[in-house]
Length: 220
Image (cartoon, rainbow, N blue to C red; front, side, top):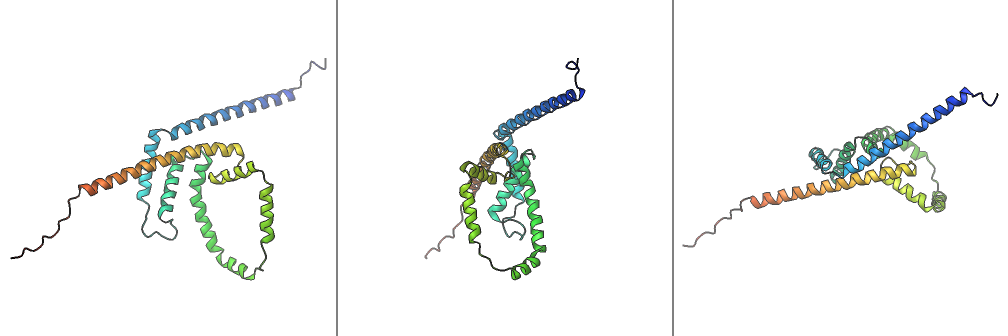
């Protein structure tokens, strides 16, 4: 008789675990489906045209002349604008896009903190005793040698992909595949824009009338 009696607590726990497993599997399936759609979206011509139009709008606001001290200069400003538009096109669905969008705000706050801590850092540097850093460098070299090659490569890949510095390998691989596909689309769009601008510049120079040279004086 005792074996026929079921424990209601164990039944409820098993039901909860089954529901949790089903929910986790559904979430994983939805993530995989959305990631596949994102990868295919970066290869579409429509997405490239949308990115190109938004990139032109962003580049029109970039000042390449005499920038302010807080604004980036020249090619760095163009690169940041292109990356920011790319992150906006990703709509914040990935870690790398969210990291690019928040990096500008973090940089601004860091500059404010540095200006506030400037005087304190100067006082600390004046009172700080000089210490040799050779033992620390040797310890770092020993740690780098002890780390396996695969882990070192994973760390390097995590540094290359924005927002993936301290993420596990599956997350880094998923983000890297999406980030590479987005960068390939960015290269195609920027190459097409460069060809278009260079072609329009050459056409305008060829359509311009030739310069009028003064006639030499005739001898009488």
